[in-house]
Image (cartoon, rainbow, N blue to C red; front, side, top):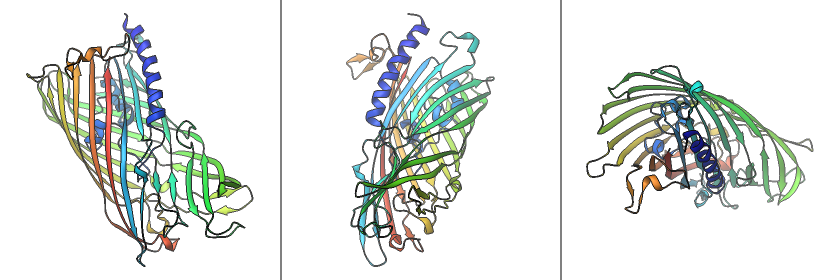
Length: 462
């Protein structure tokens, strides 16, 4: 079967499978911080230090310029399980515990990437271009507290089920330099969870609403941003594989003009509108391979993210009855430092059709929310995130679990040349944070958070 025809069938099957999987696995983006860094298991295992490496389909997210390193048609999809708690103690001794709406946030966030090298598909006129499309949850939150908790007038529940659809292209200028450009289409689709940003609290009284009422503010919109990226490879080995990569990515700001409702005990009080800004993000990284032979590869990478949270000044809610509910934010821009390593054994003598990779990493995230506007729904604190993981890649002649050749794992005529499983674990170790001087005095107190994150990704190369 011609490669182009195989690609069309592969693309159709993957889109159908990916869409179905995403409806089940990515109904909401759930984490304690608004930005979800881990968008593939391999990268998550390396502390998300992947801007410079960017050599699997998740390059579409981490550094789209890296897509030019891929051959043929490749797919990657997976999901992330997130669990953890936030424990609160007030100055008066009152205590409460928040979670992810259960022991594990459900449905979990997911990721899907489809990438095609156009030259390998027979489109010689577009030979230096690589195209792809992806879906993931780059921003999100899901936090629940008891309705009788000490800061119930501030928040009892918050969720941000945001989906990012990412059509992307990359161009290889020469063996040293590649560029990428893409769109980020952000939406609150009704297919995923409630399909809107939502915050609940217990009403303290006023506006003719009885004190103690369960209040809900929600809103949704669709907006778009863009991303541009670069990958520079100054040194390669004799096989043409990179020994040093430098990657840079810029992701633009995007603004939602949310429309929704203000509800009391489930009944509509008024329509609601608000402006919600996603920040611009600058990312840069350098990766080096001290060892890169036909038998072994060892990578070290250092990345830095700058997230412009200062654009989040307020989330004031304007009601159709003329009232204004002020929600000042005044967040601070922050840096995230990521360090990661991978050691890979290629086609071991005992397993000639398998590659095995061991991975580890570390992230350090800064708190972006000041004490004055701190909201327990996003219990921001300086965070240390160690990570570990493993990758198992089976070439087409390898045997999967001793039952079937890996090249037979496809659907119908769609047979992979390589099938890979990546697993990762991250521990979010939040520094204890004591809030004082908050605009809502019930929020003042000590916050102690811990998050456990497990990721799984499946990759198919055709």
